[in-house]
Every structure is written in C-alpha cells, then in structure tokens.
Image (tube, each protein chain N blue to C red):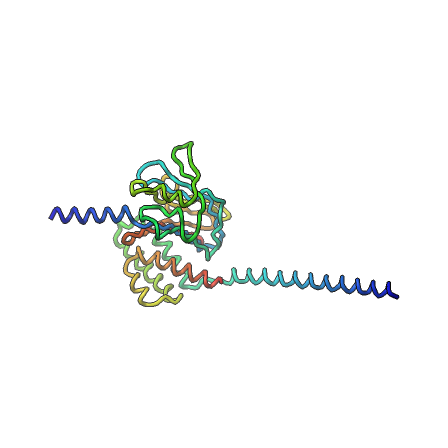
Length: 171
Length: 123
C-alpha cells in the first residue's frame, strides 16, 4: 500500500515540476496599459531571476491581450522564447549588481533542468493615470487597485498546465 | 498670346494639384475617423459586464474561501455568468460543458474565448 502511495506521490510531484507554463495578460479595461517590466524568479532561490530587456509596450484598451507560451520546449522552462507574443531579450540577474543580457532563446536554455526552473514573479504596468506591480511577492501583489482600474492575478493549474493570468478591469 | 496660354496652363496645373492634395487629406481624415469609430464601436453587452463583475467578485473573495459558503456562492455566480457570456458569444454547447464544472478551467477558457471575440469584433 505504502509503495502505491509513494508512486502516486512521485507522479504528482513530477507533474508539478514539469508543468507547462504560460503567461496571459488580458486588458479588458477602457485604458491602454503600458507594460514596463516582466519579471520571473527562481523556483526556490533568490537568484537567478530574469527581467525583460525590451522597450515598454502597450496592451490596448478592451481588446488587448498578451501571451507568453511555447509548446515545443521542455515543460519546466518558463517561455522566455514565446511562440505567440515575442519578448526578444531578457536580463539574467545573478546578484544585486550583476546581470547578463540574453536573447530569448538563450534565456530559455539557461533552465537546463527542473531545479533551474523559473516561475512568474510580477509585471510592472501603468494604466495612464497610475502604475502598479501585479503578481506575486516579494515585489507584487495579487490585487492592485488604481484610480481607474483594478488588476487581478491568479494562477490556474489544470493537469500539467500552469496558466499565470492577469486580468485588468475598469473600477 | 503664348505667354498668356502658358500662364493659364500653369494656373490650372496648380489648381488641380491643390484639389488632389485636398482630396487626399479628406480621405486621410475619413480613414482616421473610421479607425476611431471601430475602436469605440465595442460596447460591452450585459453578459460581458456581468461576467466581469462576477470575476471581480470571485477574485476579491478568493482569499476568504475557507468560508465554504462564500466559495460556493462565488463559484456559482461566476459559473452562471461565464456560461451566459460563452453562449452569447457563440461558444458551442459541448465546449462549454467540457469546461464549466471546474472553475480553474472555466475562467481561463472564458477569458480566452472572450478576448478572441473582442478582437474579432474590433477587426
């Protein structure tokens, strides 16, 4: 009996470690939203972590959405190299003062196994009247109320699929 | 006489080019206002507003889901309004049925369908 429980536990743990990760940002609000930074963090340690190294980009009001996903990479990897919306360059931050700039493909390959997996941390954004950081701790929070809009963050897990989801709505 | 004819020709060429430029600027203005009209033509329906409201309530209540009654009420309200929205935007019954039982699949599914519908409406 113990043996079977162990096998079930091992399978469940394996599935979590290799779950496919996707990031979605939906802007359903009436304000254009400018994203200035997307940050990830190591699954357990403070470093390394990644931040995007591209210009700010706009997610248009009401109809705007943004997606980072890649179905052809090992599932423990964060989709720095996305098949949908592209973020061409990332900074790999290894301490408070050091970082390396990497192209998206190279950034993805730094996660050579599941112990080096990166997970979503937060997004810094501006809705035209104020700015916020939505996501997870330590920098972000899962609900950001600004003057015009409120952003919500949640992670939806279905089988081996992990969907980091941000929704921005009018107040 | 030749000089007079040449002056008349120059004047007519000048007037014609002004008229063309003016036509172009009119057509540019029309293009711009058409784009603006497209952007502002998306008016949210009752189903859209109700889904967003239920989603907002669900997200706000989630930290307090130790309260089983609150969890059930929030999930039911979300499920009801997500389903109504999905029907309104033309999602098939079988797709809805496949996703409606689990809120963790229903929310991402509805957001994807809703976002795709809004984009299609814009275009």
